[in-house]
Image (cartoon, rainbow over all chains, first blue to last red; front, side, top):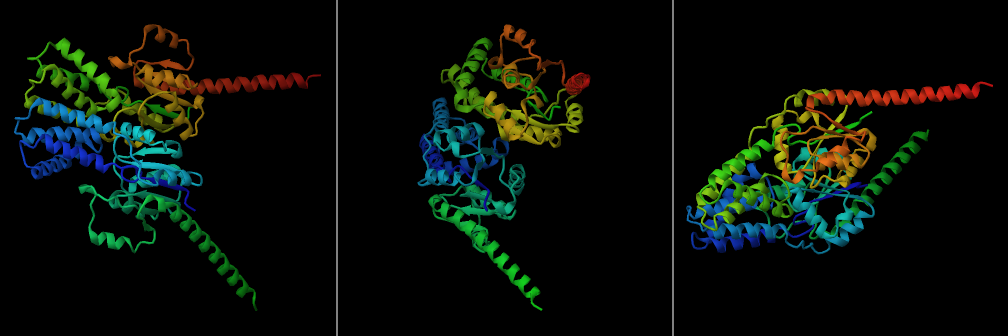
Length: 259
Length: 259
């Protein structure tokens, strides 16, 4: 039986990337007089990647990277009013309404009746707590785990903390690199719900995706609404496996008893 | 017996405020041509207070507030190169060396032999994890809890999570508002190690401080090195209380047995 189900938050329970994309569009519009859209996007991606080691994930660090990119691209000619607009865009994003993915609320509520649910997510505690509260789903989660990186060690620590065996743990998320691979490596279940867009720093190779399909603890679904069926199926598989083990055992016992 | 000891991090285990003060000094020097030092400091404090609801605590939000203050104070005349210098100050602060308070390392190591130790701190997970790693004390702590606010509910959740009774929990910190009052309200031990400076938003009244001294679970010490003695004293008090309870009990039993 799956005892603990962990969810990624952004782009698994609620939309997140469209907000970033929208912010990037506004940013490009602000800098249009200095550079082409293409160059702005390239420069931003570079600054972001370079600053990850200073800032980690989250909107505050992203806003600082936007300001730095604006300074770089304008070669110091940027108007202070543009910097102010970038600051306001960051604040706007921090407070943007939380738009749930279709089916997220119903599925989470139904699963919470039978399983312990937690959130495991990168980003900023302050912002994720605020989003969870505004999502209206907070009561269904026992814990909000903000982690600096999502690797096998992180998930191992979570299993230890909740005293759950790997084969009774399921992670649900949209990122193969962060939500799927490190979880499969531990022998746990990983449910992949691809989001229609993907972060550049989360992309994995097509070859790796093909290999994943051979893993029997890897489950890919189209939308979060299908998660309930997955949980039921895993449970009935466990049940069948146990039942067939038992019947094999009694058959063996029977044979042994036969002279 | 005290089973779980929680430490605040900044200005309890390592210096933090001096870094902020140093950053503020550099910031004032950058803006000297626009305003008096006094006005700069006042404006910064106001911007910070106003932005807490958007950004929470931590260096990234603080850096965004510095940029906003610079835009405000220069009335839009700020040079982009100054904004860039502020960005660099923020990054410098994120990577600044961790300077332990005298006695912190030895005390934490000695306590870790007998007690479960955790960190409970506000701020940014990414930055606090990095500071803890650089402090060289990481192995002594079972958990790093980053919390959005330090109120009784937060501490209650921690007691529940670690399955510890309030009278077996001790919080060690420098802020009366965040580390002491909410912990005493739960009936746990609170050890106050005043830092030589205090945050404006953490200040409490003298009257409140006087009242605290009447609480028997409030202990104030001068430096973290004295914490070992505190832990031993609490334990021997528990022991004495138990022993005297037992001897009263046996005296009562003896009396009852006497015809």
